[in-house]
Length: 110
Image (spheres, rainbow, N blue to C red):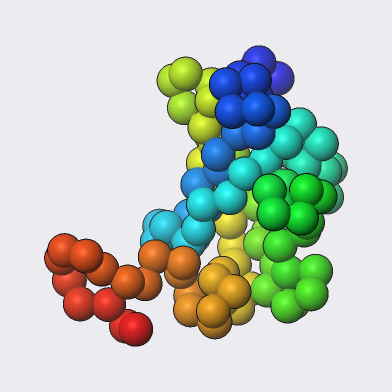
């Protein structure tokens, strides 16, 4: 496996999550080594909650699971891109994507 740089961000690595079919960016989360290992073992996206300081599998309470189809690493080995098959909404607000508000550009669905 590629050696990832978890130390650059205090043991965590940003994970950009994108829908594998539409390519819509769904969310940004953080992964620890343990959450990445759990993701690879289960096929379900598991992240590290910085606020709760614990691992969480996306969808474990909402049922809106993310089935991981591919994981890419950037050129500096310090950011991941997850392509997922999203069940339901990705955002805890109920929106399909966490990026539903705009500052500049097309109108949002807010």
